[in-house]
Amino acid sequence: MGLLAALQFLTRVPIRLRAEPSLNKTVAWFPAAGAVIGATVGGVAAGMWQLTPSLVAAAVAVTVGLLITGAFHEDGLGDVADAFGGGWTVERRLEILKDSRHGTYGVAAMCASIVLRMLSLGSLPGPAAMFAAAVAAHTMGRVAAVGMAGTMRLATHAGLGADYGRGTTPVRAALGCASGLAITALATGWWAGPLALSALVAALATGTLARRKIGGISGDVMGAAEQVAECLCFVVISALALHHHLWWQP
Image (cartoon, rainbow, N blue to C red; front, side):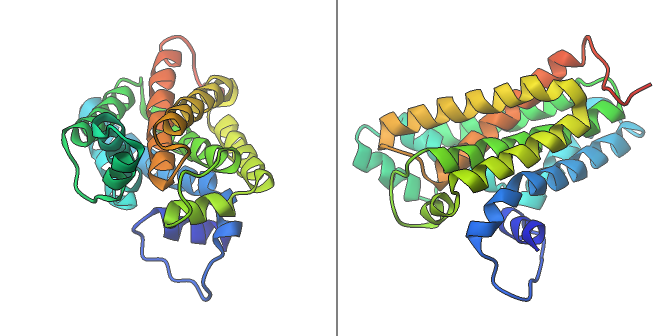
């Protein structure tokens, strides 16, 4: 039930539940939902690798991921880039965050994220590495967002971001982060250590910037943290794959 509720929240997949899910209980399942999304993206990349050049396989896979999630986190990244890059006061930044339109900063940030993920995924040496990378990066991206929500104060107290933050107690955040780290370790072995550090850096950097700009975090900030962490994880995996094999590879 918790995993299905998390997938309902984070994706455009038409999932019907018998009862209205509790966000308080759903948050801890976000990293597991990220793993499901990552497995789908990685599966597409691994399958396409057999038919097309690796960069084409990566481009198709990342595009499938965008379709599954409805660019949910990319939208948050774009809003944060516009607000923090173009807003000169706290009030103006909060106003921009509520605006559904994207400006130059937002479009540039979203394009950079997509290109970086495509190139990193496409640089990996084979289908096994592509699959594991997608699972790990999507999982740790959600770990960063959940960890941030459970440890940092909110900038505002209205809207989806506030509900998300209030529903993430430190205990639930710890459970979600622990499950995400376990999934990542299963997929990549000792690589989970550098990837956990990448997620931590993304959460701290994004959260610190948000605190300076708007006094705390919001739903958009958590989406931006997910994107930063996901990109960092893909880059780190592309570097690790140059010199090391996955633990389960022959």
